[in-house]
Image (cartoon, rainbow over all chains, first blue to last red; front, side, top):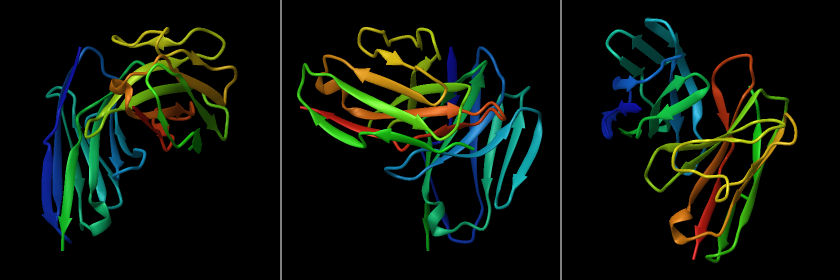
Length: 108
Length: 114
C-alpha cells in the first residue's frame, strides 16, 4: 500500500521561506512529484525528483532522500499568489499516489 | 507539456442517472488517467485509461460504476453511472506525454448529485 504524509496547514509571511515536508512509505518508487493546486483549479506540476538531492527551479526547490523516504518542497521569497495547496505524490510504475496536501497561507 | 480540456465543467444531476465526462488532449499522449477529488481532500486515482483495451481500475472502483473509453491517443471519457449523492465530487483527467513522467491535469468536472 501507499502511505504519504504531509502537514495539513502552514502559514508564512510574504517574502519569507517555507519548507513543506513529505514522508512516504510505498510499495514501489519511481519518483516523487510536487504539485501546486489553487482553490477550484487543477493541480499544476512543480517538480520531480527521482535521485537523491536537491532540484532547484527558480523560487521553488525540492529535495529527496530515498533511504529516508523523505522529501521537502522549499518555497523562497514567498508571494501572495503562492497561497495554495501543495501536493506530494509518489510514482509507482505508472501510477501516482497523492498525499492529502498542505495548505499554505501567505500573509502580508 | 499538454493542454487538457474537459466537458462539462460542472453539472447537477439527479440520483439514478448517468453522466459522461469528456477529456481531450491537444497532442498524442502515452497515458491517460481519471481521478476523483472530494471536497477538501486530495486526489484518488480511479483508473488508467488504456488505448484500445479495457481500463485498469484501482481498488474500490469498478467498471460497471465508472466505465471508461479511450478510442485514440488524445481522447477519453469517464461515465459515472447510477449516481448517488456520494458521487458528488470533482473528476479530473490527466495525461503523460511520454517525454517525461509528470502528469498534466485537466480543469476538472464538478459534479453535484441531488
